Image 1 (cartoon, one colour):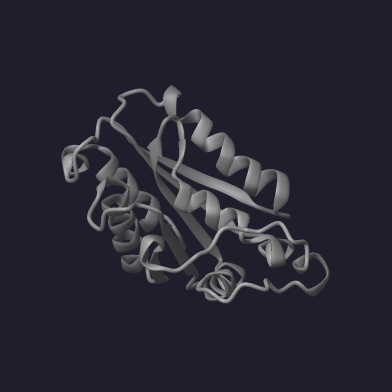
Image 2 (cartoon, helix red, strand yellow):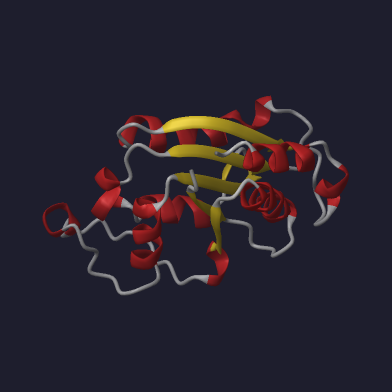
Length: 180
């Protein structure tokens, strides 16, 4: 069965380490026969949530930017990949802003499979756990029926391209390929 796979790449660098892992995941998922779309978040206009509360009753944000399109795709997807570089033990601001802006329709992002891709200069998985806590807080505590299917740790990757010599490249490909 073909699945809709949505990859949300929060890297600030196209071809950066977390973005490269997204491409490997996409390659594997496409080869497994899935419909794959990658959104490079940095190329989108996503404003900060203003906390105005209008969306609590209207289920629409008052801001006119690219988030409505992204949110529609999140609702329609079967599988969502959330990828971020790890800055100071957390996801970057682009990814956090995107998560904050799901409020108008987060209850519709239900019964999805999630994969997380995290990349950092640090060699320790333990130092990426706070980032994963943020992802899990969003998916497990806020979304109905969210299933965490895997985590790809891109460790030891400081400069763009460092990840290419990492076992994470094969892990990302294999994770994508496993989607059926």
